Image (cartoon, rainbow, N blue to C red):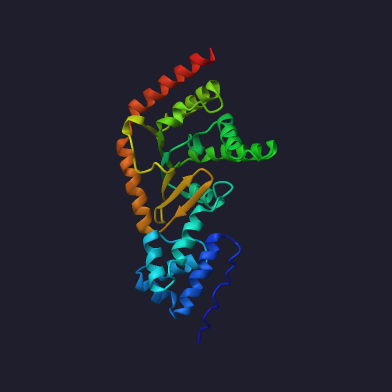
Length: 281
């Protein structure tokens, strides 16, 4: 007779996501439900329940409300998930870097800054230093070097598609001063000459839009499901739940549709390069 493997030990102190997973497992066991039976009641796959319990993923709000209801958690899971999503992270998770390296296409909306893959060292230094003023100069330089090194992804023999929608504030805010911003925008203009890089600008005139809360990256892979990465300041979350990914994709599509076409976007960036250059001289 085959031996059933023992469930993996959980470490609730590892992260708030791990604490959520530990709480979910306790509630499931109290209800005398297997992962498969609980998944069927939601309904989602039992493997997704396993990922939640291990702290490797967190559910969408809709799924979480259903779990809270089925397990009689009286709102505990809802409250805990809110804390999980507010938990600060010191930088974009290493997990995201791994996913980025495997992606065949990335569609981004950037609310506050140029995408990391297109940043110059000077621009990156200013963004990182301002966002994390407690870092030493050495720590800032290490992060800058790491960010700049990621550019190789766009120069691979079979590079991913990088399609970025920049909020107009991104190109108008003189990060690092006029000279630094001029050089950064020139770098973007050079990058879009490659067939795998596209940039659009979401103008102020577009008004309110679905991604007012932060930046979003939609990622596609050769043999894995799409996922989303939602980022706001020092907070970030990788989203794999299919329903939640579909919702984020819808939000991105609406923003993409409201942006200027690539041609007019490039013209606007070129105009700002001239304005920054005039400030320098």
